[in-house]
Length: 113
Length: 113
Image (tube, rainbow over all chains, first blue to last red; front, side):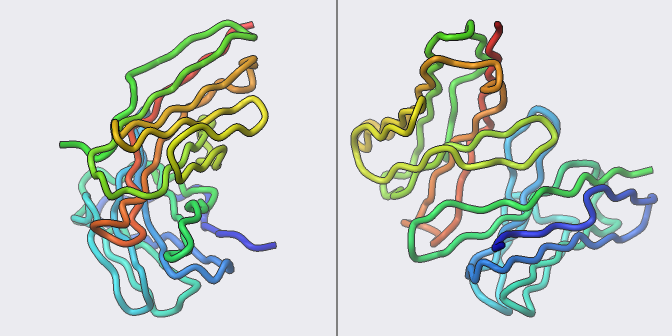
């Protein structure tokens, strides 16, 4: 079945540690996105990529980094520079040219311990 | 100015009533509009998409789009307790950044039996 897979579902980070969240899609979508969601809040865009080897900062990119080496994969690294990383992280993808909706992964809940 | 704004919640309706959710957007060249439902702790799931002015019905859900007023709404008829969730309005802002989706903060709906 086609879809987006995020892993892990739960992740715990120690202070000062970098962690990487995985996102893989087999929908052949060009565009991929990372969103952050805090309790009771909407989705805030961290980074997005429309093509392999290219990505753009979203509204809250500070303290995060991404790569897009393959069309199927868009991993997000939460660096130690992100001072308040505890949140629900959602990866999504879209077909850029057909006006279709964004498909979401199941999310990763990151907690700082 | 925020790209997408939703009516503030929470919204509470009795079972069987009509729930009305509203959304306005700022960019006139927006072309695609989506309503997502998000249960607590889960990722958003698409329930309606609309691309042209007027109404679009799917079961108990009706989306309404008025591009002149930059307004999109979602009506849920015969509301059920299982409809209790947060509803996110999303707009595809192809005019400025191809493929970037803008989300509202969401409206929390509670349907009480």
